[in-house]
Amino acid sequence: MLNSLSKFARTWFGKVFFAFLLVGLAGFGISGVITNFGSNTVASVGGEDISVREFQRAYNNQMNTFSSQLGTVPTADQALAFGIPQQVIGRLSAEAALNVLTRDFGLGVSDDRLAEYLRQDPAFGDVLGSFDTANFQRILQLNGFTENEFFNTQRDAARRQQLQLAVFGGAPMPETAQRLAYRYGADRRTIEYFTISSNALLPVAEPTEEEMAAYLTENQADFRTRPTRSVKLMVLSPEEIAETLEVSDAEIAADYERTKASYLRRETRDVRQVVLSADGLVSVFEAGIEDGKSFDELVAETGLPVTDFGTVGEGELTDPNLAEAAFSLEEGGVTLIPAPLGMRAVTVSNIQPGGQASLDEVRDEIAEKLRTREARDSFVDVLDQIEELRAAFRPIEEIASRYQLDLHEIDVTADGTVLAGIEGIPADGRTKVADAIFDAEMGSLAPTVSLGANRNVWFDLVEENPARDQALDEVREQVRTAIMNEREDAALQEQVDEVLAALDAGTPFADVAVARTQFPQLSQPFTRNGDGTPVINANVATAAFNGGVGFTGAAQNGDGDYVVFEVTDITPAEGEIQPQTRDVVDNAISESIYAAFLTALRDDAGVRINQNVVNQVIGLDGTQ
Image (cartoon, rainbow, N blue to C red; front, side, top):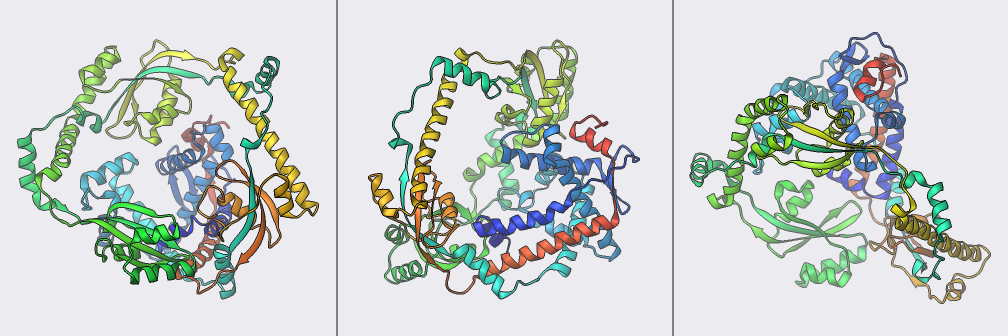
């Protein structure tokens, strides 16, 4: 089920349904504020408190997700403008209200079941898939959990899941709606088209000095330097210490003999598949398999794009149907299995059988384990020694050299994006380090930046570089390029507008194309995701689905060209709706009802927020 949801969420149909789901969840915004709590409580819902630690973890996770989508870390003011704190409080308060209800109903989960979930969670496994206590502890530390907090969180999540599945699971959608949803994702369009490319444009005029100077003045904000601070920085963590350590072959061999029973080599295979969205393609593959043709021969005949999963073990394939099929095949074999919208052909190669791993196969793994163990044992001692040297104002270069730690000399901006290049600083710690750097005073000893258990950062502030306007000589080529791009875009858009105006006036599509010395090309039928090529990408396909036969339009494709098109045919989806599609539709309805229930439950319980504490956690003045 989860694999089906994941795959379907990447289709246009899936995106539409999950957009509706997000609209339902948008009700989680919170506006009520009260400030008569203790300093360790962010909010209270129906008598259940949301702690600062709980809010901080959820807020950091949301900021990291937002940053990965935005490409930069938002400031506290930007996060507030985007509504991130409100979203986090909304979700936590809804969960808190549901926790109260589930406990009132007497729902729960046994310690044995929690332990079973823990052992099965791949996030806590070692390279062989077995539960690794050390890895479990490390992940808890990185995420700011104590064991007690983690298990309480898991119990609450299990209770919520029990209630959701018992009350809201299995809400079916009517057959007509299922059919409409199926056709939305599986209908296909055929178009005639030609392209308008910037390569066909006459050269645009080069900007004069006066034009570039004026453009820079009007757009100085786009070329203004960002304030930076030059620092010398080093990171201490068990991983950093481990890189400086060496272990002997004798130590590796001795550890292998003690633990060799745990080193079992898993069977791996190279797995590939192609999706067969049309009945004709299924027939081609069925006939080809019957005739003994190879997967590569069939792909060459059909020209279908191949999904290569690489070399994987059976447990690494999250789709159980794919895993079962792939690990039942002989090398080079081909089989057909269901896909969310059709069928798919699967093949395997490079089968490596499992068994007892030899010392040579696991030598590097054992060496890394021994280095990590020794590094963890020595971490506290090294930390104390470095703090003593810092207190004695020893240069950071000297300390880094003494302990063989990497010394990074970098220019840091307020968003800390450059810190992504330093492996020892995790994504959720970059903002904290950057804030400390910009809070530091020149000539003063900067404080240690702690990024959770067993991870610390030290730096010396070398230089402050405030933001400034740049002169034309500094950014001449960037300004010229920006002007030329704008002029080319305008010229290209002008041609597109002329073509669309002619089509709107009733000029036949072929005549419009010939007038531009082009001949219309006929596409293959495609879905809303396009045909898998840059020419008719999802953007062009979406535009084509905005009308029926005879509909004309233009959209920019993956090559940056404009595709001018006329819809010539609509191919309705046929056949039975795949079970995966029904599951996604039913699940979307269930989730929407569940979201509305959570909002009502939270509102009935009442939410009180300690806004001063929230502001302090996200880095705003508590009076705001």
